[in-house]
Length: 75
Image 1: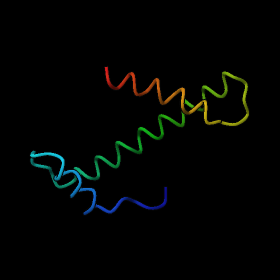
Image 2: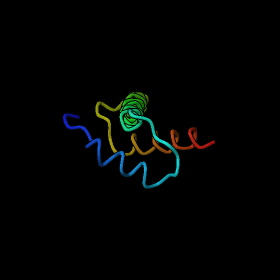
Image 3: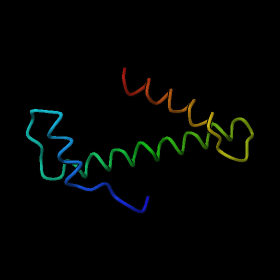
C-alpha cells in the first residue's frame, strides 16, 4: 500500500459520524487498525490456501476467512 488516506478527509468522516472528542492521532490509529486487519486477513487466507493444498490464495479463501474474522470481532 503505497498511498495513505488523506488525514483531513479521514478526520472529517470520523467527526461527522460521532459527537465524541477525537484525539490528534485518531486517524492514524484507524489507518493502523485497517492495516493490521488486512495483514491478519492475508495471513489467515494463506493458511487456508495451504490447508487446501493450493499454491495461490484465491477469492474463496479470502471470503471464508473474512466471514470467520467478522464473526469473531462482532461477538
